[in-house]
Length: 568
Image: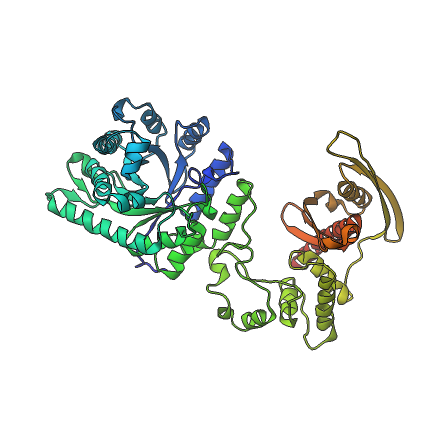
């Protein structure tokens, strides 16, 4: 737990630039704005918005933030040093950076001599001039500079003296942050620690050897005024770290750098980024704050971390990693009966932090491996109190194990398990009864989709209803027919959506006689729930899952109405 005396770390989010380089990730201007504002609420002090001029989307993004700025965070523009054999003042891309109107600019330059001679096809001295000229020019235009030393660790290992010269050039030009980048993601934590310590020692020695009469150490905070280095005073820069996950070491490497003296940590939400991704801020923040005692964001903001992680995954249209540390749905899930029993007595037995500290929650997973403790805990999580001394609890456990042996999977279909518990307790509300259904499909040659017609016969309050509906497939038609038959009795069904449909063949060696498991995810705009069906007939399995999805949605609505009446 952090205190007022905890050392300060500065977080720098690059989800909107480096993160969007992930394969399969694409965002609109509106998406970027929504993410930036959510990161601002989370308390991230530096948010890198992109490379103005690289594409029209980033130009418009920065323009819109000039019109409606963030509340607390500094939005940062990103760019490279000028081109070889030119001048910064005549460099068109730097004019785009100035037009973005940000107070802070991140400039990246080459640290590895291989990249200078092979990539830029220029001399080592010209690369140093590019770093100095670019930073000096932007400083003369009133910008504060974060210098990203690209491929720093590879450059250091291949040519230490030259790599250090690039940092000295950035210091001499007025950079306030020097961020060491493990761009290829191939460095190990012990190397990171050793090299960061060496850099800090070397730069301290270099600065101490110079005339220090006019040296100043400005506040690192983005809310401070521009330093006085443009009046002749020197800046002592601070060190940051930027790691990639190609060796699955990004988080460990960033922590190693902090332990060695780095004061800024760059990363992305959910670890998004090119190739294998960047350092995951959703793991870094709680590790650094709750474990290492650094101050990154407030405790209240930390409790928003799980929601922020899922918000970003929704906006970029990528499924959340259910097993992600700290913020994943399974991060505090307990399945084994012994584990559940222990956690019920003392959460410290199998939880390294309290899930609420990062806005997550404990989950008791139900499966064939469950014990009675799982059933009791899961029931409580849904407001159902079971007495372990009574037969109902053991009946539910036995029913669970029997059904899972047949292919059901309640671990991923908690809504179906809730209905099972209500039935075992004799309290399963019968909103409707399906008397039968038929599905007819027309397969049209040359078309990828088929037309389907479903007919359902249901009974509500003793009244029989026969309805038919079409869909672009048998499950869609069945779902539409059920809704059509029920909506006059339960108008709230109009708000239900079938949001996901998964099919798995359980015993493929039996050919067409194989059992099929269907998982259906439904939602009402506020909540989502999953139901399961199993049968050798895929339509029968789908019917079971769809029907239970509607039934559970009605149960939620009924419980919400009862709660409102009880509170009035």
